[in-house]
Amino acid sequence: MDTPEHRRTKRKRDGVFQRDRRWWIRWTCSLGHDHRSPVGDTKSKALDEYHKRRASVRRAREDGQHFCPRLEPKRKQPVTFGELLDDYLRRKDLRTRDEAERKLRRRKEAARVDLLRARFGHLPVSAIGPRDVEALYEDLKERRLGEGPEARPLAVATINRYMKLLHAVLRFGVRHGLLLNNPASSIELARENNARNRCLSGDEEARLMKALPVWLRPLVIVAINTGMRRGELLALRWEDVDLSSGQLRIRRDKAGEGRWVALNSGAVEGLRAAKRRSVVSQLVFCTPEGHSLSPNFKRYWQPAVKAAGLPNFRFHDLRHTFASRLVARGVSSYIVQQAGGWRTASMMQRYAHLDPGTIRAAVELLAIQGKPDPSGTDSGTALEQEHSEEAATGV
Image (cartoon, rainbow, N blue to C red; front, side, top):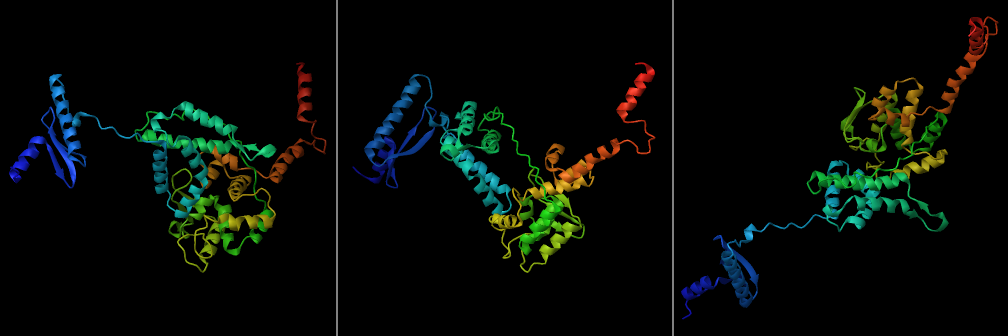
């Protein structure tokens, strides 16, 4: 007899039932827990699975053990390096306020990200060890740019940037409990010899200002008078500038912290010139249309540098010029360090180079002071006086 009540009884007895066109099983484990799960699209498959589960329960009871899916640890899919890298880059993007700056940083990091993803992306993070990191470091040192006799090795600074990105991603994994320690910590990077001694002379400054578009000159004026970095200047907003008190605020600098910058009369005049432009924008320095300068800054900067005849000159050298001019005027190293936002005095000293004319004038003082007195009152040089004293004492 096939009545609805009979079908319900049979379904309950067999532990197999159909729902939403799929077959399910219902069974009780050795601990008395009620379990339901879909097993297939045919009744025969569902019955086979149901009887297997019941047999497993019987064997567990006979052996004095328990059979229950809830006792089995949940096996999580291991996190790969590629997933960790994506998460790291997303978190890094959230810390960057300006969208144009974010795109510029992505473009600069693209080659490094692609290489690390190709090398480790498919591997679980926990499977990467110091040997893997060391092998990457050695491969980078062997890599060549170009082909044939003109091929050249990667610069030390370039290799270090690859390794620093890897170190940062793995350190991010340590902070999130995916690694016990950072396998890249044992790698000792090569020392970079990238200190520059390029400052802008007065004549070069005049030529550069003449070659620059009128709307771009205030940016260079403020850079020379504050020592601010290009990224800090291009991200600067009017809400962070206080001309009445003569200072501005950098919300996030290279060190990841904000700082206040003192403005001299030259910087104030440059900011006022930028404010007199016809286009209204939240950015202090922008294109004539009011857009960010970050993506295409070199399009305007490089032609002006070439027209001014400034070989081997970069925008960052304006920061060198700022520090060197302060030191040449007798400003203490500590004040220069605070004014430019350098974290250490040693880093500031890499930027503060005296121009050759100032050094020549200083050492010329030795030549002037070392000459004998033309009136004849001096008994000779210091060395001659020392010999005469020795003769008098008999030493």
